[in-house]
Each structure stands twice: as structure tokens, then as C-alpha cells.
Length: 321
Image (cartoon, rainbow, N blue to C red; front, side, top):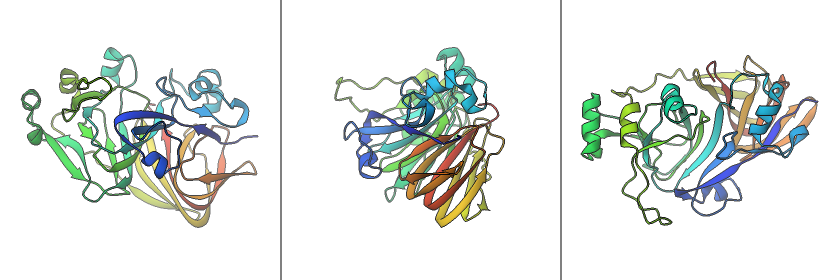
């Protein structure tokens, strides 16, 4: 019988983390400085565990390695996507991620293109998204001279906003913001600036990666052109945010209704319930859905029906994943 595979997340404490993963989502977090919920992950730094079905108790990386048919015999050495929820109780470090080629050469893993759906944002909250340098020389000059106010570009955000962050984009999630992040499965981050913070555990400032940041930042910055569209599937409003070579991301919004979806060309689908309550029916069986639940619809799930009041972010691998 085909079925969705529900996952137990992994949590990471961060210098900038808080407690909203507990207060807002009900997760059992390790401390009040928990910054990241790795919800759908096969990355070695925090693989999620399957909670039901024939692979119950196995980590997702192991299922990918040993049971590739679950994913439609998709190619690739590593599961290509990673879904996180981030709680920025303080500003994250300003950072940039490499593309696949640079990461393969220098880090021996995938590059990192990512995107954010803004779950919550305090009034007046901002992200750093892009920069103002016109040339690589100007970028390097402003970085080495610490002219951060000249360099960084700040944008206001509110709940429901969506930002696409290609590799090579200078960025930082700002204080008071929670996001659901869909990204390539990479843990490579080049820190450009960390607000001169001192890690209480080590008594030292965290390592910066200035040359790697200069090497990998795209100059000049240009905002990606997104074709965000809305369609209707049954009672669900489906918002397509992005379909990139790495991943596609959609929102499924259902208000006291029902919607039946059919498998498209993607071999599997990643699903995160951000709010509400309802159920998913697969192969005649109902599975309850509540806020904070994450699961994968494997290759053999060709159709599924959602019922209830649900706000969901779904993603699928792109052609280059």
C-alpha cells in the first residue's frame, strides 16, 4: 500500500536562535537558543528519521541510499533538497553560498540555492538581501574596510512574503522573523559579517570567510524575476512561487474544503504543514495533519486528497536536482 512518510525533525541550537519553534509549533527543542528545525533532511549534519511505514526508524539518507525506488529511482549521490524552519531571535550572520561548481571544488558537496517563505515577522522586520557594489573591486574594498552600511541592501518583509536566494546572493534573515526555507542539501555557509558577536561558549568571535565570500558573490546584484501565479485545485488555492533547476515551491491553501492532487512529472514531493488542521487521504487511508508536521509523498503515491483548514508549503526537485 502506498503511503506518505512522516519525518521526525532534527534541531540545531544557534547563537541567534530562540524559543518560537516550541511556542509557535510545539516542538520539543533542546534550548531557548534553538535556531533551526531540519524538517526534511538527509544531510549528514542532521538527517530526519522516518516515523511510519516499512522504513520506520531509518534516517532519510539511508532510505535514499538503499531504497531509491521510493524516489522513482532518481539519480544523484545525495538526496538533493533540505527543508528547514528558522527562528531568528537575533539577526543571522550576513552570508553568501557557493554554486555547485565552486562547492564541489572547495567543499565537496552541493552548492546552495535556497528560498524563504516568511511564516512570521515582527512589525518593521527586515532582511539583508543583495548588495550595492557595482564591481568586484568595490565589493572587496567595502568588505575589507568594513563599510557595511554602504554594502548591504535591506528589504522589509511581512508574513506571506517569498524570497528566492540564488547561490552568490548576499543575505541574512533579520531579527524577529521565522521562515520556512527550501534549499539544496548543503551546509556550506560563507560568513561575511557577524555583527561582532562573541560566542558565549568559546568566548571568541565566529569564523568569517571573507575571500570565499568575495569569490562567490554575484556582482552586481539583481533581484530574481519570479513568475508567481495562483491556480485552483478543488477547493485549494495553489500558489506557484518558483520552478528553478534546483526545486519548485508551492503553497497549498485550503479553508474548510477538499482538494485532490495528481502526481506530476516530479518523482516525489516534500510537504510541510505551516498552519491549520485536516487530513490527507492516500490509497484509501486517512492521515491526520496538524501544524508542524512534515512528510514526503514518495513515487508510488500518484494521487492524494487534502481536507480541512490547511496552509502547506510543498516542494519538488528540479531538473538539475
